[in-house]
Image 1 (cartoon, helix red, strand yellow):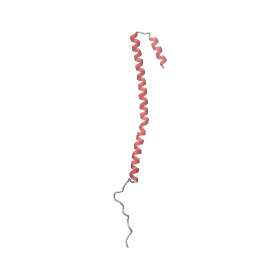
Image 2: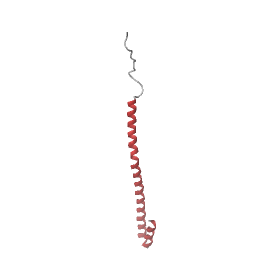
Image 3: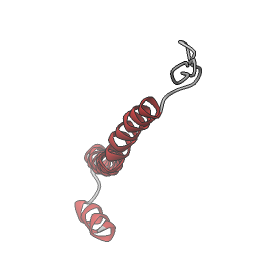
Image 4: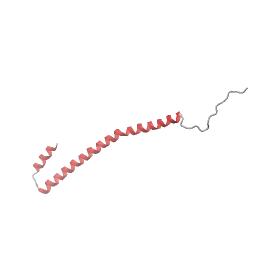
Length: 87
């Protein structure tokens, strides 16, 4: 009598094991969480950049207006009333 027969398994199986797939999904998941975590900071940074650009444009307008008034010797009361309308 012979003992129980064993099935032969190939030394080189094709495909990925469940552990390998699980680890790959874990790595991808951690990467996605990290990337999505950066979005709120990116939006805040973009908003600050727009605010800074608008502030710089307004300051440039004010200084250009001051330079114009100084060069033309115009009445300062017209200049200040124009600034009050901008607020």
